[in-house]
Length: 231
Image (tube, rainbow, N blue to C red):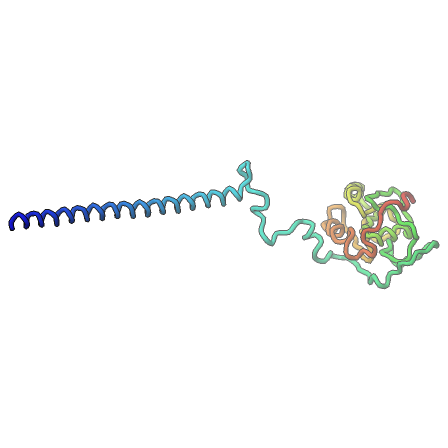
């Protein structure tokens, strides 16, 4: 009987040791899984942040194009083309005649902003005319969506030169001297007109942005070449 008791006790001890070994193995395995999961999560987070940072940078380490632009930020042209132009005069387009006539036309304003006109337009593909041009041909160019810059002898030569540079680079615009106008420098579109203080007056850029092929144009897209190229 004593032998059996010792054997039984030894068997119980062996079973306890085996159970302890299994528990340790299980604990080690669970710990390894948890550690691996934490490492994987940490690595993913680091890579994700790195990718986000790289996305806002260009290859040379500078901020990528547009990364600093605010959602409500507008292009200069969009800003210039919106809002009123100080001192601008407007005429009802419905009251401006659009008939083609061969005879001369007496316009109620100088320079004219619209009305009946000659069948041939003045070329307005950035043309800078050194001499006065016929009103009846210039008005036809306005009908095609051009901006007409005019000036008197009182306009400073530097301003005239600067305006000529702008016009020469702008399709659907033209420029010429105009003797009898009220202001030294004036800008005219179909049904629109403003007198400006000089070439650097911000209303010059505004007027061009508004009215070069702007919404006032009776015949948008019509030709500005192939017409009259000299007074």
